[in-house]
Length: 103
Image (tube, rainbow, N blue to C red; front, side, top):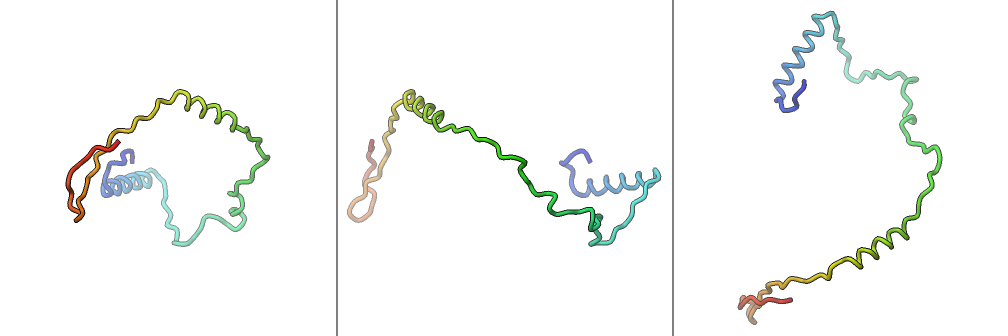
């Protein structure tokens, strides 16, 4: 099963062929009833997957660095020029009259 672009039917045929060749080479496939788990009560501990930090890490305060970078940006930024925009003017009855350019 190398390509993910195969359709489901091709994948089923390939899986069946692989299973058949596995059984022909001496392998066995056991059927397991639905609901049966491979874990015994002693094997699986639900608490083993929780994250427990070993020690608190120190943090670096970057506020002064951020202020410096922001100050630099303000010095080098070009003044923003707003482009004129088209605005539709309506008459007293709500009918469009004309377009005007507004800065």
